[in-house]
Amino acid sequence: MSFSAAEAERWIPRLRRYAVALTGNREAADDLIQDTLERAWRKRALWQPGTDLRAWLFTVMHNVHVNVMRAAHPVESLDEQEIDSERAEALSSGSSAESAVVLSELRAALGRLSDEHRQVILLVGLEQMSYGETAAILGIPIGTVMSRLARGRDQLRQLLARDQQVAAPPGLRRVK
Amino acid sequence: MNEERLHAYVDGRASDEERREVEALLARDEDTAARVRAYAAQNEALHELFDPVMLEPQTQTFRMPRSDAASWRRWGGLAATLLLGVACGYGVRSWLGESTAMPPIAHAAMYAHAAYVPEVRHPVEVGANDQQHLVAWLSKRLSTPLRSPVLDAAGYHLLGGRLLPPTNDEDSAPIAMLMYENAQGRRLSLLVKRESKNRETAFRFVEEGSTRVFYWIDGPLGYALAGDLPRHELQVIARLVYRQLNP
Image 1: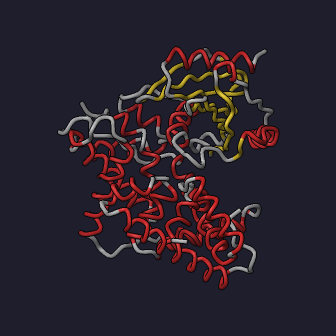
Image 2: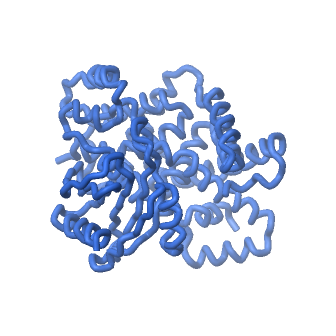
Image 3: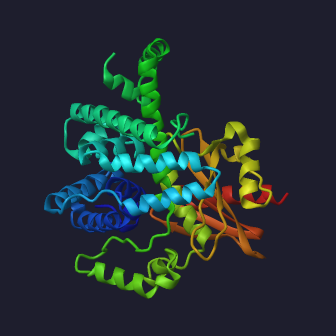
């Protein structure tokens, strides 16, 4: 007894959100998802019925990602052109320009973190995984999750604070 | 105070007692308070930045391979190429023969339900505590007066709503999403969108995995109700919605 293809496919939007945030690049994210689904299907007998399929799929995706990173070319986690065009769009669209500028800076800052810090920040902050689930997905002790979370968030904070000092007048700190 | 507790507070994972302790600390330590605000803003911004990804029309149709022998990647690529002009997710899916053509609103309901219902902290953009504002805001964005049905009779109350981007390039109408919840924490999603043709249809039904969707068009508006409920239960609620909107 295992999961059906349709049950796993329900989680694609969630997997894709995380993959885009992790890689900073839609093409790499889509490759990651495709490889994840193929691997998940091959290994579907390993999933234990009754456990959280979403967390299991994230675990599979993490393992695929680690393999890709290990095999890889230097990480190109940041698509500068994409960011520039988003910034231009945000600036020209007027209404929410202020927060959008900060968002594109967040994206850039995220790209400057180490993969390890980025993973923890995204699984906890974006995917709302518990610290225990995050530890299981990444295959690390929960204490390591906490220390990476603390260090990663603080680095992110400092990167954003620095960007804003350079690029924006004070007062644009908060997103909303 | 240890750092872990501050993060548990930011992530909504602190116990009531821990939360009180952290709040007491933040009240007297402005530096720590600023840091905690920055961490919380990071979480908010991550959602704002990446949540829209969940609803992007996929240029590539991801599917589980179904059978181990399937050269799925090749077929996926071929389908994407052939259908590039009309690619809007559901078209590709139906071409592959799995699900019958689903109109954009039903497709959006399926995905938005899967995407937002499991959210603990961000299921909605605007909460039901400000219902007037919610309905006015969504009405304005859809350029048509909306109403939020009351589903108390079925045990569901309004949780809030959000605005979803258009489903594909040909149909630029934004979609309003209302989320309801019952006492057991089970959630329903009601999507409403302006239709280009003014017409009426009967209830139609689709399901994928455990999610079931009833959808219909009523004059200028299309509706889709999604939930992880048995079909007949969902149909009862869909009728309730329909009756309320057509008194």
